[in-house]
Image (cartoon, rainbow, N blue to C red; front, side):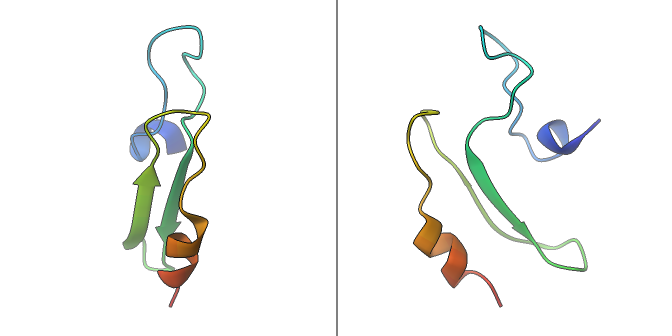
Length: 56
């Protein structure tokens, strides 16, 4: 158990196994997920503007 497993962002195979993928997860104070984005390639940046726009 942990953040990576709970939110599906833990890398489970290959040389980066055990690390977290590049992702943005916004969770409100009640535990409701407001926004998620997991990029397909670890070298790719998430859409930070979209994440900021999801903030209440």
